[in-house]
Image: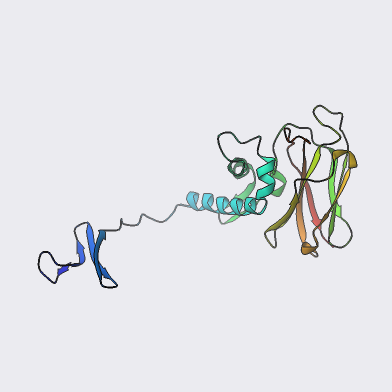
Length: 212
């Protein structure tokens, strides 16, 4: 129940119907009564919230990559939102509360440029990850001067190292310095973008690598 201490025109302290009167640092004010809280979230809501949190956290760590990699796939939305939409549908596994990212299903770039053949990633010398592939520069839209898009993500630290300006397709190899991930297992991907930026390949998951 509210109290009116100085007559009908005085300050209100407490609840009156749908309003609440109070005082803050000597200032009297009224506000709308807070709406009652709804019931607890359902399991389906908690499941979706967890997937969203996991995916947005991951995509923030590779934001610069997907901004380039999904630029052609974005229709009336940002590249980051396009990446989120695709990967939420395809890149998580499990049921709440045991949900995790499904790394081999994630896409960091999306398009119809042919990717390289025989793509892979292996541990190199200390702090390095070596990417290898077979050049197929004469296949469809693929050209020798297409640029490699390379990503290395460390689940233990939730950080990624990537480049959107890697070696040309014709070089058939790239070496990534990931010394900050030494001693840890990382997830890896690569794809290609044309030299003029107009064509992009779907990224390929190149597996887990134990960094020396």
